[in-house]
Image (tube, rainbow over all chains, first blue to last red; front, top):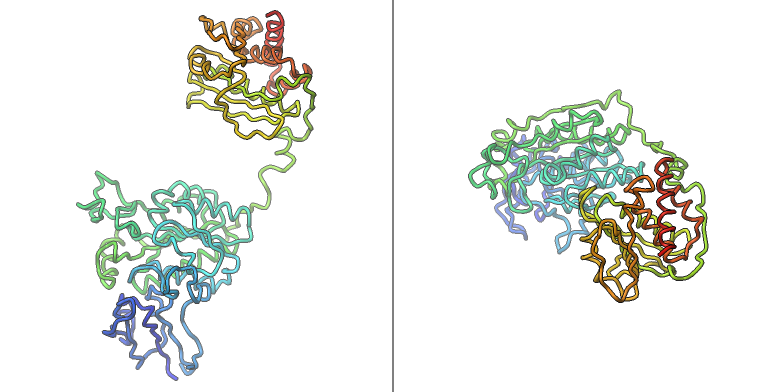
Length: 72
Length: 474
């Protein structure tokens, strides 16, 4: 199982701060809206290295979790 | 469930669900999109996890956007009055030295209304870690100017931009705190971009570690974006900070004595219990006396004059006299800001039961030392009550048919005894004689208690005797 970013749609406020920090350009706006009417993020998870920078850049404690693969 | 070796996610020192938060949504913070507070919260919680401090931490929430920090942190929490977080934290750490204290404050809270509290807590080296979130604006109240607002920055209260001429310069708290001797670690960090966030993470951990290791006071000022207050998009906030904030608020460690510094020990009190008990005169039991008649057992007294005539002392002596005779007493002063020359009065209540109210609106005994007080208070004296007044100063005899009036040339008698300032003690002598309820032995005990100088005591003993003598010859 590769490393991956988990976005919790209902906890994302769509500020977009995670987009620029991702070295692998894995994050983008989903174009969909959550119950708070925020355009929440989505993660491609094609080349996540579990660097964790998106987690640290995110102001919302429950919005992003990064899971590192046992292989990496 | 997917298997992962390691996860980077919400720290354990934050609640899994924010049950204290009202409403349906128990997983989101109350902060706006792109707000720096959430990042700072995460970094603090992560450091509490890493350093294993949460179980012993008391987190002080301020007034401001972070007023609800207690929704989120899984540790002890107190939400306090505006600006007072360092004062409350000081109290908690003194009472419970085993606790770790976090004072979390915004720029309005710490740098405006709480300026005094933070400076003195830092100067005392209180064992606490202060996180000072500086977003250069009042966020919660709708974007007014903060002490940290930048020159030229438009806010609702500086619609043309802050100007030095009007509002002064933005205040640099970290630099100010760093020049004090006691703080052990003072830094300014920022959460405006990922590089700064990772540096802030180090500073926050270091400041908490300093406390864990018993070193004392640490403060980290953290520059944080407020996209709502700045009226910009969250993604523009990093560039905004680079351009506008960093030139005024440089990042860095202004003081780091975390290595090689001994902590401040408060294991010993400045004074021992014995010293305090002795200072208060509680190491010897005061003598007690019996009332010889019940006339003074229930009495409401008002003493009035101008400041400097010893009105307060007279009232205190009366209260002590009652206390020595086993009565419940109260003494309530009321005076202006002047030490001399203003008006002063005090109320004394004697009772055989607990005193319900120390306020004397309608006295049984009125002691008047000057003219204005006579005019003011004589109408309040109850019918059948006693008026004792200083006839050395008040020339026109007061007129009331329904009360007992005792004119005492108190100032003259006091002068003869050695000092006109002892007129209050002359009055005391007259009062105790008029009632005849108290033990004469108690008077000398009281005088010795109140006057420690032998010379002054001598004058007052004479004044007391003069007053008693005068009353006997009425």
